[in-house]
Image 1 (spheres, rainbow, N blue to C red):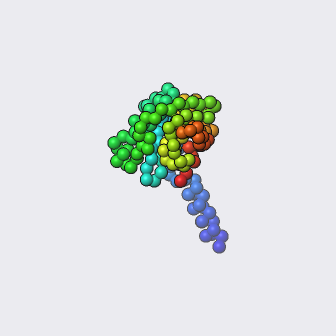
Image 2: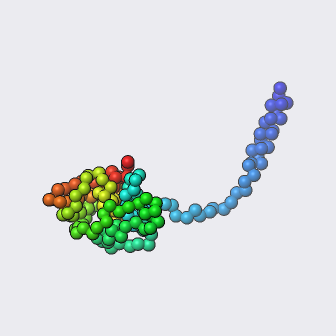
Image 3: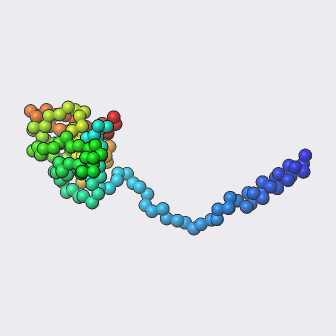
Length: 164
């Protein structure tokens, strides 16, 4: 019994000594690690499956009104073919301000339900703009809409419209 056990032990030790055949390499650089939020502006459009954000690489905004203009430009032809639509098709007068992550949209003619996709388009687009413009953490941005007849809706966070 000891010979087979000794032979087995020798075989195991030989395999361990040989290793798996992978040769050691030097240190390789994997590049920079991803960090937090992706770079660049995203705008949000409605679809049959809910609100969807689309990137606008290379597009810079300098204020919240710039984000609104970008949103009003609507989805590209390719995005429309993919089922995206803009429920905010007409330019409605708005005043948008922010203070320490609290974005207020003053839109006197805006009437919408609290959880509809057009509200989500505004909330998520302006939340993203606030993150880019002022460095606010995405989970700290709150958006309030002051609409028709001074009715206040919110504060909302973008994830309320994406978690459906």
